Image (tube, rainbow, N blue to C red):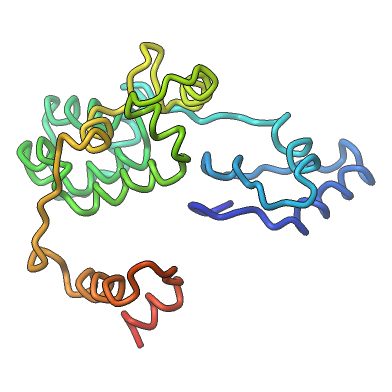
Length: 219
């Protein structure tokens, strides 16, 4: 499993390639990764990377309504009771994206919370993760500032755009177009979120490592 915004280890790619050449069809592999994985460019042997993974690519696109309902009910907490109209709203906003669907279900407390989902930090974080895997050109296409047919085709192929050329999720679309400003006060943050916020303020313009955040939170 290749985590969010993680690049694959080139030594692993070469080792797998050599094993494949040595053992032929006697070796198989399965890698779960996000869209960002395909953009790994800092590889000396990019040609081998593409040969190993691009020809065996299975794209997991947004779920249809039936499958999304099935997945959502697996996520649902015992204390949560959702009406059919709530499920309809959640599915529509998620566009079938499993991660966004999960965030919407877990953050649900009433119909009002879902209708104002873009003001929820957890849901906003999930949307930013989705958009964080895209490069500037791809984001500009989603914002309708660029009409590159190559990029449109790629985004459609991977489920970011539907067959009508629309962004898969109206919630993502609203946030991306800046039609839903996020008004979060500092006092709305949890103590942990405040700690991270202060750390990012002190280190503005610099990369903050996972270890640095862990040290700030837990010492």
